Every structure is written in structure tokens, then in C-alpha cells.
Image (cartoon, rainbow, N blue to C red; front, side, top):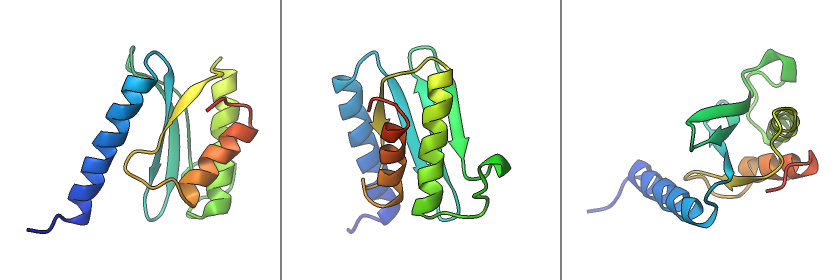
Length: 119
């Protein structure tokens, strides 16, 4: 029986996250979520279960409401880097979830690196 796209996505997300947890124990996580209409990023402390910084295309202050393209993803990456540095975060590991490291997800990572986050 063929696996659905959703099932394959969930398996890939668990595989990626578990591998990253083993390799990057003790570091904070930069998690990215992409939907058809929006993109968001969060810096998460898994030990304490706290979100330290977040940025989303739903925020009016970023000027990308209702857009989900590479340009919007770049603005999200720059915003998350700025907010993370303000929260005292210098180094994170990039959790792409089940999404491929391509296009919008890659744009978030590159913009965060340019913003000063060490990924």
C-alpha cells in the first residue's frame, strides 16, 4: 500500500528532528514551519519548553502579510535573527521539520545566518 504525502512528511519530520537532537544536545532550536499561505520561525529552548523568539508572515510590522514567497521568507529570517540576538541567543541548530532544504526554507536559514545567528 502506498504511503500518503502526509505520512511521508511526518516520518521525515521525526527522522530529521531525532537526528538533530542527538547531534546538537544542549543547543537551542530554530524551527521553521511553512504552509501554503504563511511561513513562520521560532527559537525554542527544548530543555525548559520555552519559545524565546518568533517571527511570522502574519505580523503586520514585517510588511509581508498574505505573502508566502522567497522574499517574505528572507524577511522572516532577518527578523528571527534580530529577535534571537536581542534575547541573548547566538548559536542555534536549524530544524527544517519535514520540509526540504530548498526555496523558502533555505531563504530563512540564509537570512538568519546573514543576520548574525550561528547555524
